[in-house]
Length: 85
Image 1 (cartoon, rainbow, N blue to C red):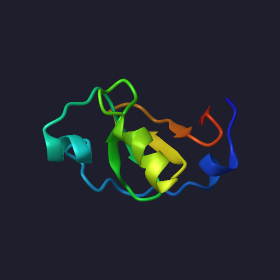
Image 2: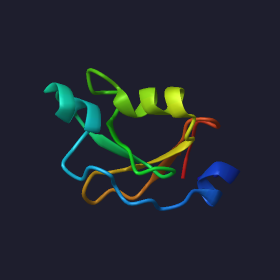
Image 3: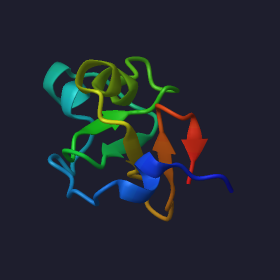
Image 4: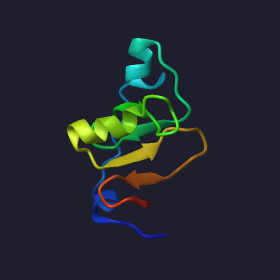
C-alpha cells in the first residue's frame, strides 16, 4: 500500500456531525457512504452519492485527506496524491 505525506501528517479530528453528511442533512439529500475530513471533521458523502459533498469540500477548502466514516472501515484517502492509506 502506497502512502503520502498528507496521510502520514493528517490529524484525527472528531466528526462535526456524526448523524450523516452535513450538506445532505441540511437539504434533505441522501448519501451512499460517508467520509470524514481529517483537517476539520466535516462529514460529507462519497462520490457514489448524488451530491459528492466530500469531494466538494476538498475542492472548496483544500483539506487533502478524508477517512471512511463507515462502521468497520479503517482507511484514508488523499485527494492531492490520489492514494489510499
